[in-house]
Length: 245
Ligand code: F6R
Image 1 (tube, rainbow, N blue to C red):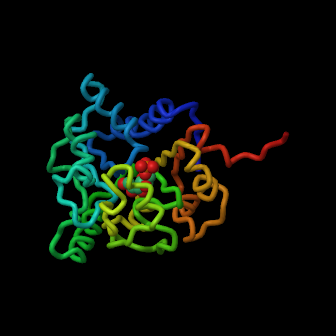
Image 2: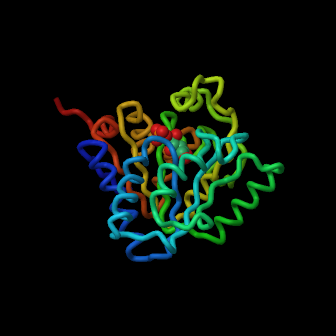
Image 3: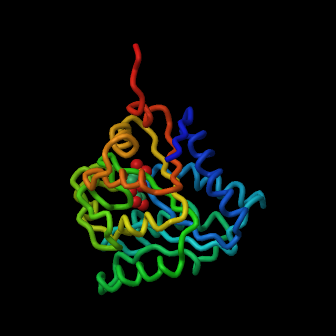
């Protein structure tokens, strides 16, 4: 696990963007695994800027997202499909048909999970971008999720619902279920970049990097992946070091 500690969110975003940019420049047909939430916004901003400047093209790139709320249609402003469209896909030259987000409104959700796992087999990712929950979740694999699990319908933890309430009018409006790529699917990516900022992530980051590999902290499994870069700001990294005085 390579750990980079950046001075602030902008530097963190630039460092993580650098990894993704290198993948796309070396393979214009790369498959990118993408995440939603606050953490990747700075990376998506840099992707949009350098694409507009003609420095990086996503014309042949394919993207696969981690998760989607159950019950929110793609046009719902808090759906992850909408998040990706407005924060990234509309701002780069990726073809809409090459972007994939699980369908949280599928009539048969079990069939949708199976379809998504088949898609992941067909589109092996060159790099997977991740954030981390305050409770150590990756995608919506909450503590206790099986390390060998595939895409499935998950119940969101109370702490995840509380953390995501900031995007909704009230906590009651946050969906209670999501469709999430499993840990097995995440670990299948050739390369992984995880970004975390802020002191509220410090304990989860410590457990991920320095704690035992345990399903109690889903992100700890990343210690077993051969190519992971963790990019943190100083607050998120604050529990990684022993203080000598
Ligand atoms: C998002 C996702 C989640 C978030 C995590 C951190 O697609 O799968 O695991 O990465 O909840 O969210 P933020 O970045 O909003 O703190």
